[in-house]
Image 1: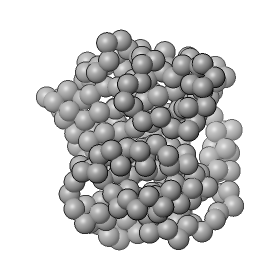
Image 2: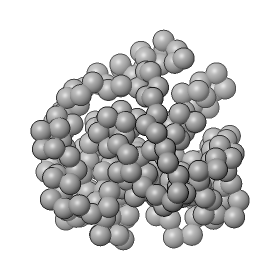
Image 3: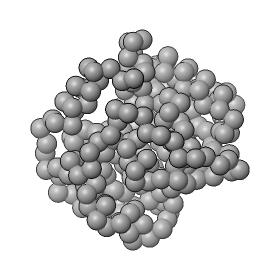
Image 4: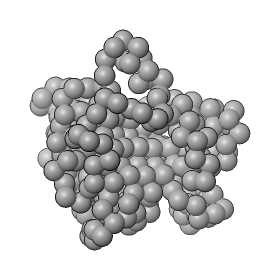
Length: 242
């Protein structure tokens, strides 16, 4: 069960002072509901990719530039992160990115749904370093069940963190799940290869601190029922337009 202080923090995050985002790349959830889904939003049915926690948007710009044949949804719970990401998207001229202020689990469960995503990217999420707070981490068994439900057969789950304990725990969780295929030789690796490097990740690499990288693929013959949404993560529809 999620503790009361967490609910207070969530309420504080979602009630922060908002800056109006007028970018054409920004999509309020209410607008998406009215349009009828992501294919209608983009005007095509190209494969859909989700980045959870887009930060300032540098990672999604690199990713979308590299693979223009896919559509990208970049989400963040912070209004300022969405605003900065939109500014970068607008400056890039890319038309295959949309930005939303939304809670990932709610969006995945209520909007995206079964076999909707070709890939999920999660880069350096809040590590909740105190032991008593680690149940609040994004990547846990409940989230993994939801991610596998949303991923298409053969879809990828990519996860990075600069926090040692989180990286080790993520590798252990993912490697133990028989519904996944590890695309790296070990549960996690510090070798990033051609993986796009965000400004935040670069900061740690320049200091000589390793990034823990997990890259897994959903088995193509796995059938997954819709999981229950864990209580405490519902962001009310339509309250994140600004």
